[in-house]
Image 1: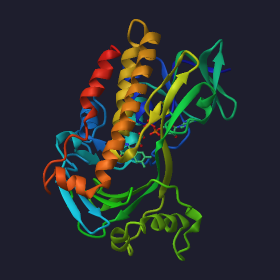
Image 2: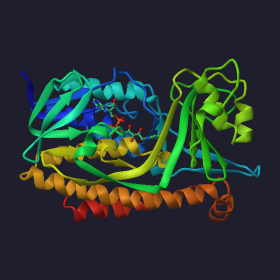
Image 3: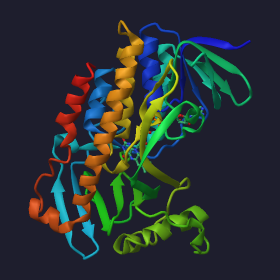
Image 4: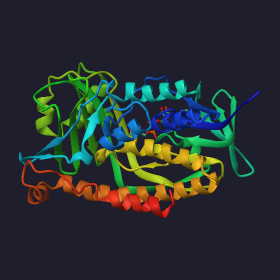
Length: 386
Ligand SMILES: Cc1cc2nc3c(=O)[nH]c(=O)nc-3n(C[C@H](O)[C@H](O)[C@H](O)COP(=O)(O)OP(=O)(O)OC[C@H]3O[C@@H](n4cnc5c(N)ncnc54)[C@H](O)[C@@H]3O)c2cc1C
C-alpha cells in the first residue's frame, strides 16, 4: 500500500526542512523524503545576516540565536590578493556581512526542527514523479515504494534535478559556468577572525574563510574553466587532495601558504551553470531552493534564497487560491534569477579588476552597492502580488 500525505517534500536541505516545519507547525499533514543520512555536508558555509534574521523571525535555528555555536561570529571585511601582488582591503556594510558555519550541523538542526514540529520523515531516494492527468500526484522511491500527495509535491532537492527534467524545462545561462571545490583545513597563517580573503587569478577566485569553531578554515576555489582532475600527480596524498591542490596552484601565493597544511577528508568538487526552471508542464508541483534554479556562489546567498522560497511557498499554500499563488511565485522567482545572473556578472567584473576597485574605493572603505538588486527584488515581489 502506498503512503499518503497532503504535502510531499523531496529533499531535507534548508528549503525542504524550513517548508516542512512551517507546514507542520500549522497542523498540515506533511512529509519530507531525504536520500542522504544527516548530518551531511553541503558546500555553502556563509549565511547572510538577512538569512540569520529571517530564521530568527521564523523561530528557527539561526546563527544569531544565543544558543548557537556561531553566535556573534560575523565576517565584516575582505582582503583581496591580486596576481600582480597588489592587495586591497575593504569593509562590508551590514547587509553584506555573513556568518561562516559548517553546513552539516546547521542543516541538521533545521531538519530536527521539522521533525520536532510534526513533519513525517522518510529516508529514501526519489526516483520519479507520479504524474496523472497532467498533475503531480506523488513520488516513487528507488525501491518502488510510492508516496502520494493529496495537495502538493514540493521539489526541494537542490541541484540534482534529474528526475524533474521530465516535467520541468531548465534554462541554462552558460555565461556563468563555475567549476571548483571546497576543502576544510587547519589554520595555517594569520587571518583576522572577522575577515574573508580572496585570491584573484585572471577570472578565477580562491576564497579563504575562518569558520565559527575558531580553529578551522574553509577554502573555496571557483574557476571559470573546467580542469581535468585526474591530471594531478602528487604522491602520498589522497587523490581528492591532490586534485584540490592542483587547482590551488593557480593562486601562487595562497598555494605556497597552504603547502604544508593538512586538509580534512571530504573535499567536495562542484560544477555549476547558472540555470532556472523555465517551464513546469504539470500542476500540483512546486519548486523551491536550488530545485528551481541557481546562479552562483560568490555572493553567498543560496541558503537565504532557499529559506525565503520556503517561507513564500508556505504563504502561497495558505492563500485562498494556492495554485494561482504558486504560479505567481514561480514566475517571480524566474525573474529574480534572471536578474541575479546579470548582477553577478557585474559583481565578477568588479572582483576581477583590481584597478576598478582601487578607483571606486580607497583601501579600507566600505564595499556597498553590490546588492544593487535589493530594490529591484522587492519590486519583482510586489509586482507578483506576493
Ligand atoms: C561552490 C558553492 C558555494 C556556495 N556557497 C554558498 C554560500 O557561501 N552561502 C550560501 O548561502 N549558499 C552557497 N551555495 C549555495 C547553497 O549550497 C545552496 O543554495 C543551498 O544548499 C540550497 O538549499 P536547498 O535546500 O535548495 O538544496 P540542498 O541544500 O542541496 O538540499 C537538497 C537535499 O535534497 C536531497 N535530494 C536530492 N535529490 C534527492 C532525491 N532524488 N531523493 C531524495 N532526496 C534528494 C539532497 O540529498 C539534499 O540533502 C554555494 C553553492 C556552491 C556550489
